[in-house]
Image 1 (spheres, chains in turn green, yellow):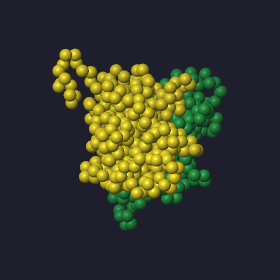
Image 2 (tube, helix red, strand yellow):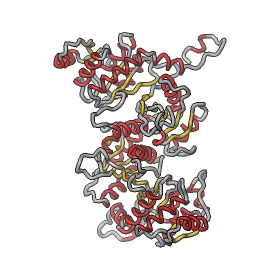
Image 3 (cartoon, chains in turn red, brown):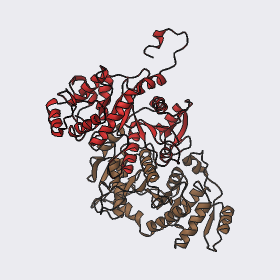
Image 4 (cartoon, chains in turn blue, purple):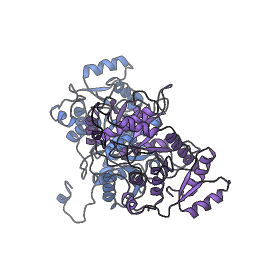
Length: 306
Length: 306
C-alpha cells in the first residue's frame, strides 16, 4: 500500500516478478488488491494477506505503528519475522519500513540502528574496475551522530564483502580529500573512523563516482541527496534506474526499500533482488561479519546480546 | 598562487583572458610569475604585483591571514578594495578567499557572512525553460545555522534577479518535497524560510536539476556535495565545466572562486566572468536588492549599519 502509485504498481510489479519465478505475497486491503489483480487478469495467482490499516503521510511512523498492528507494512514485516516470507520489499516511506522492521524483525547483534545501504553507480570508474560503490546511509537517519558512521562502515564493508570485494576500502564522503576538511560532523566522523583498518580517508563525490572506494559512509541526509542526484542525472530515457531497491543494513532479515515512484519494472527488479538476497543467505553472512569474534574459552552467555 | 597547478595554470589562464580583452593583474611571487610568463612568451604584457607570502594547506586561513599581510590572496583582495582591480579571482581554497575578502573588501550592508553562489546546471529541465539554478551556499560555510538560509535565500534571489529572473522562486534542498521532511536542520530552515514570499518549499535533487526553482538554498557542506556531484557527472570529455567559477555572494566587490584543479581555459573563463560581473555593476545591484528599504522620513543615521 506504500508508494506514489499504490497499489497499482505494486500489483503489476508482483505479477512481473511472479512471471520471473519469484513467489510474492501482497499485503494490504484485500478487496482492493484482488480488484487490481483481476484487472491485470493474467490468471496468475498471487497470494494476498489482508491488512486494513495504513500509515498516513502526516503521521510519525514509529509512533503510528506502535498502535497500528494491522498496518500493511507492519503485517508484511511480521510475515518475514514469522518465516512465512523470506524478505520484505516496500515502496512506502523508509521511516515506516524501518519502524516496522524494528518492531517485528529486529536487528542483527551489535547493530544499534539499521542504515540504508544503496548500490551507487560508478560511471567515472576506469575501464576494467568493478562497478558500484556501497553507500551507507542512503536515507534511514537524517540526523545521525558522527560516531554512528563507524557502524555504517562495518555494515557497508560487510555488504561489500558479501558482494565479493576481498578487502573493502571505506571512504568518508567529504568536500575535500585532505584530512581536516569539511563540517564539524565530517571532522568528528573522520576521527571516529580513523581506528578502522579499512578506512581510506575522505573521498569527494568525483572519487566516489570513480569507484576509488568500495564503501562510502555519510549521514542519511547527505547520502540521500547524493543518491538522488546521481539517480536523477543517470536516469536513462526508458526510466531504468539500476537495481530498483536499497537494503536496510542491520535488520535481522532482508528488508529492501524501493523508490516511492517506482514503476512496475523497478518493483519487479526489487522483488527479484530481495529473493536473491534471501536465497544467498546474505543476512546470515552479514551477521557473521558484524558479530564481534567470540573469545576463545569465553562462556556462551557472555556473547549473547553482545 | 592558489590551486593545484599554481602558478602555471593561472599564468596560462591570464594570458588567454588578456587575449580575449580582459586586463589581468597576477599577484604572487614576482620572479616565479615572470619566469612562467617568459616561458609562455607570447610577448603579451601582464601586470604582476609581488606578494611573497602564501597561506599553507595546513593553516587556518582566517588566523594565518591576520598576520600574513603579504599573502598573495590578501594582496589581491586589497587591490580590489583600493579600486586598482575590479574583481578578485582565486583557484585557492574558498576559506582563504573568503577570509581575505572579509579582511580587505568587506561585506554588503545587512550581510552577516558571504556564501558561495554557484550556477548549477539544470540538464533535466523541460525544453524552452531557462537553464541554470543559483545554488547557495555552494561551499563557504559547512557548519551554517538553519536561519542563515534566510540570508542565502535573499542573496540568491538578488543574484537570480540580476541574471534576469523576474520573480525568483527559492527552494530548500531536501530529501522529500513535502513539508516536515528531512533532518532537524532542514526542518528548522523550512520554518525560518516560511515567512519569505519567494519561498517555494522543499525541492529534491531531481527538482533542482529540472529547474523547478530559480534558487536552491542549503548548508555549505550539502551544497558543495551537490555541486561536485553534478559537475563530476556532467563532465564532458574535453573537460569543460560551465562558467568556471562561483561567486562569493555578500562581498562588497566581485569575488569569484574557481576550482582548485581549474585548467587554463576554465581560469580564463573565470576571469572573463569576473570582468563581466564588474562591468555590469552586479554587486551594486545586489546591494540595492539586499538593503532593507529605507523608511520614509526616517533619519539617515538609523539606516547606517543596518
